[in-house]
Length: 430
Ligand code: NAD
Image 1 (cartoon, helix red, strand yellow):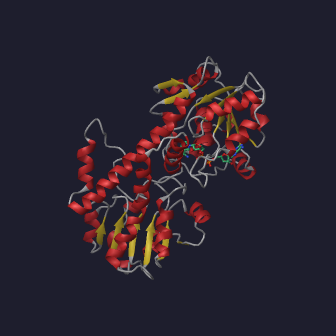
Image 2: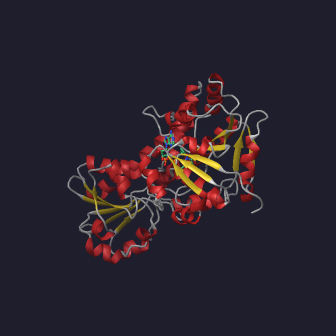
Image 3: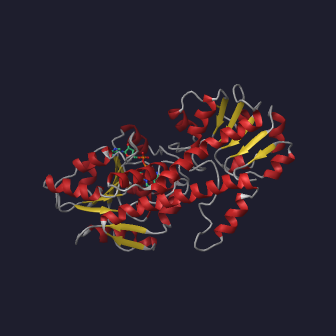
């Protein structure tokens, strides 16, 4: 690394903040992390990492000297020019993005011509313009503003940081900060999209909306495959080999989840509506996804009859493997629906149980995969954790009371399940 790297501030030490902080520290920057959550900052100071993300503990330990943690914004403001905003923007009850954390950060900014706010949080298109208007009203218009949306995926977040498909940097007018942000990312040698703020904001929302659309599309194809005798895995393979379509995000299952797709798709739909445009396609994408989470209930009922009193084991809870994030997970809807039908639901996840318990405190959580299988009338694969995909189905069949296995991710070896005498059903097989 030649010459000292630009130091940065990172406001918000969640998934995006910690990965961004650790990534830039690894590239050589001093990184000043700030969070309002005192317990979290205390943990980080002790070297404990509050989230599960593969490789993150090790990377933060490796760069410990360059990473500073505080609950005081001034500690970062006094040390850096660039303040990366990585606070949460969860959905409101109405489905819009809740910008209260972003607004709190904006309100705390100094009147400074030497600082730039670099927005990594996902915000509706137009937020940057509003923030710059607020800065002007508060006589802080010397402060630079950059939109730098984040595209990392939980579970492979560090790999995504170091090998991004692209880096998007948006700034309006002749500012200085976009070039500095772009320079920070330069060692990653990723394609750079240097653009205006509104377009940068929209790139993030449009990318997530497109990916969600692809998933809902293949899920609808899967449902038609079930009616027509086709095999969705074969169909997706054949369709995905078309270079114009591509193979990724064509896996049928029980719907997309996670903190981002669910809220960003809804936020884009409402952003359009608030601007006077009815984004009809996204309404369908959302509706298909909601129905998809519930289809497993009908599948179980077809095999078992009424579900009241039936013991259903959920294999996995997180919205995808390699994360403990439960936000927007399909398991939330599935577990609630099954319990509403009177089923007794037992659940096992290798990592996400603590997070799940915060949202669904009354679910019956078990500490081992054996315990979730024991006496189950049916099992549902919800999250394709490798250890769940590789289950010994002969042993499972011996421990279960019933014989039904629903593969909610089309990830199991159907032949192995059937060879154990169990009834296998995936998503999208006629
Ligand atoms: P998170 O909830 O994990 O972390 C947010 C952090 O911000 C928390 O630690 C919270 O205590 C802190 N915070 C809240 N208000 C604060 C304030 N005023 N000052 C300092 N800290 C404050 O959120 P996340 O998943 O990291 O997401 C952050 C943003 O990045 C969101 O807008 C999200 O949509 C976007 N994003 C997330 C992902 C992802 O996979 N998680 C991917 C891309 C983009």
